Length: 187
Image (cartoon, rainbow, N blue to C red; front, side, top):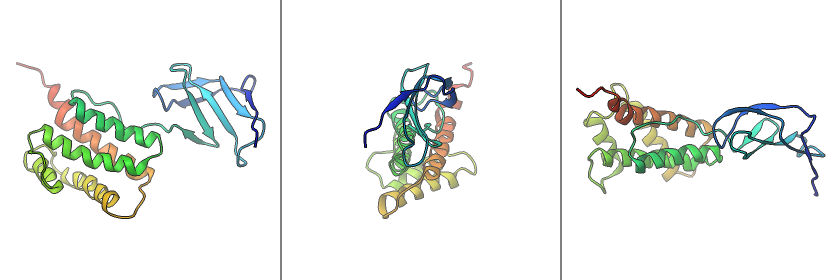
């Protein structure tokens, strides 16, 4: 099938959050095919901020928007895992994101003084027993562990909501351990 792409001039603008740079934008720069793809409108919009393309197939956007937010004062190795988990969701790689969130717990524990090469549950216990998990937070740390174990040890594919939930929980843990303590005024 040979698809001819036309310029969007005169079609109108679309506002959306760019999956590349995260800015909320409106643009009329982009392209659309002469005929619908799979019966759905397809569009490629160009972000005026970062100049990268976002593809829309019906209402589905590629790349997706990475869930979560930036977190300050996180060690680089830990932060890179958090960012990778978020970017996996933007690439629709949900199982990979869940696996990275599991690995993130281990890396957080080691960055806070846990020994390397422990069993995974020992990293979770270290975080909980050392006060790195907020009160009533053990449940969501266990949720990351259980979902990660499910993705690792079972024949199952994780979905968008699984990955987004774990990123949300991971973000809160990173804020609790790194960002909030760094905001305490020095005396």
